[in-house]
Length: 232
Image (cartoon, rainbow, N blue to C red; front, side):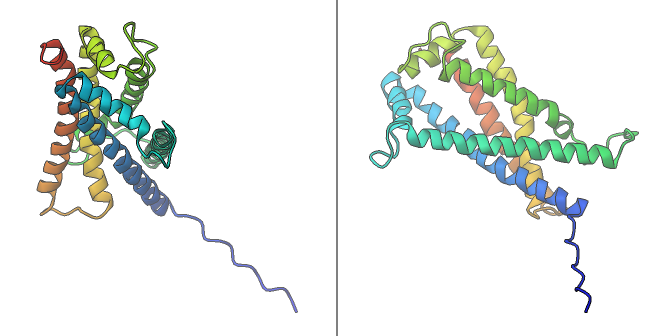
């Protein structure tokens, strides 16, 4: 008897692959958003003075003790964030390339509801955010571009770093692409999970705007507070 034919494995359709990419972007985006919000809340300790802020910074390294050694859990969190950022970038690149292949011709005009200003800047905004993150690590984490950096004195590094007004101006400007990215990202993530209907668009847009303003606007407070002498 002839051998039974083996049915070929079904290939992923472009629609299913795009949906998987959007889900990957949404999930990784939620992880990164959680970190950004937590980072913002933690930085509010700077208004309580050097002791409170340095204690918070040291607590990040000793968190999880005695089950984890000093800095071990912090590095695990960093690895999770690195994985989330990598997935987010790869999914964004995949979706962008697929969208360009599907519509090789340029649009004659942008529809306001589909191509908002935030959505049109997602790619370049993402590149700007990545460059800012690298600089931020070099500035306030590693100290390689911070001439007054003192290891173990987070408060000094924070205040002395933001006293340089071009640095503070750069931080504030970097919040513009971050805010636009968050706005469009929250909007798209809610759409991906099925929260999309004419009756829900109002609060969905409001929630996306609130998150963007909270994070991007809140982060602008820190360099401005140092320049104004509120934090010294």
